Length: 319
Ligand code: UDP
Ligand code: MG
Image (cartoon, helix red, strand yellow):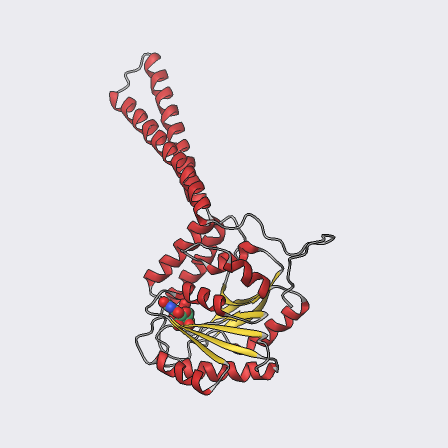
């Protein structure tokens, strides 16, 4: 009987034949160093190359390696979710397969976890070997997301993080389909902290995040945690309607004072007013849609960390 798994490392992989064997070796070295039972949980997200074969071989040779093989490409966030569903550890680390996230940081994360933190996310202080466009778009992405969402999503952190079992169990209770895992992790709360690192260059292969996937991720992040864009419509509409009204009043006043006001001005005022009203109405519809969306997501209403002084304690400690 193998010991109970204490640490699970979840690795989403998509067409990473150039690096995945190396990733396995580095993860293994780091996890062996910790000296407690662990599992390496690879999620093969429908790779079309030799990634699956390499990982199958690893799983045959090493009983600590487990492989979840998707039937097709479902996407990074879904792969992470599957890994969390299957993970058995008391702490779960999610890490990219391309070694941009250094496995050597995991012991630091575990140290923080032992201090009692339930989420330890890795924050990038710098990025190496990435294009100017990638760096700038990432920077803009995190800032824009922070500005537009209602929860605190830490900037410059990816999915490289350690999660306590309690957090994993909460994430499993979230049925939403367009998942933005980082946002969900912020949403569930618990005590969270960061460790800093310099993001490395890819160890091989190319980025699996084309612009299309980045956009999808951004939209998922924004729509899952924000209704601000909808409010923008109402605010813009009110401004337009106000301007139209003012325009009309001025035109009428000037006309009443005896000056010759061209009909164009009245039409312009009316046009502004109408556009404003339509936008306000859109914003109003949006508010209802947002509420429907909120209900449809079916997130838990609240999350309890622990109960004290109660007879029935069905709360199970993660460690
Ligand atoms: N990935 C995945 N499914 C996808 C795209 C990416 O599982 O559809 C994995 C990929 O193999 C890697 C991680 O997600 O382990 C991050 O992807 P990548 O390194 O290409 O993103 P970048 O670092 O360029 O943002
Ligand atoms: Mg990468």
